[in-house]
Length: 224
Ligand code: C5P
Image (tube, rainbow, N blue to C red; front, side):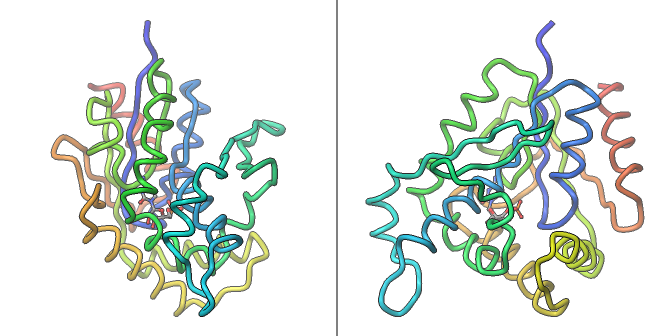
């Protein structure tokens, strides 16, 4: 039997990736955190494509995109993101990347560059992919679609604690502003905006735990 294709979209810091990771392990699926890919391209741009004023030069980025080779490697059961053979899994979580990623992710050239590889990975089934446009654009025919949401204060708290646990310095107010700004840019962009697919199941996990969110998703998967 073909294993399912599951799309998990939603607002920033609703736990999409960590929840998808657990579900993937439980159901024997591959997990792809698509946000990490956009963060990877952003990290590349910050390293290689700045103009004199220190901001990202999009023309430079578009013309050097053929030098971007992103690859997930399984290291001790963890998927670690490499860019041109450098482990960037921690570097992509920095504030600098978070502050620039939505600007990079709204560019058509960047989305086109990442779209086909995401679809190729899902061809054989057996995958759970999380992001912003998975159920609407990347995998509109996914077997199951979920859309996660939570209050801004709860999401801020979670992201702030996550950064601290990664040893990344953070300021709670700045984390909150970044989440609000990213959600705004992601929702308002022309191409593949952040929005709930019409056939997605919405889960607001403001007051429920990660485990309860996972159980709810699994119960829907068993029911459908
Ligand atoms: O999931 P994460 O918060 O790491 O995503 C970082 C950013 O990548 C998002 O704010 C959004 O700008 C972009 N993104 C996207 N489409 C996806 C996944 C992420 O535009 N499918």
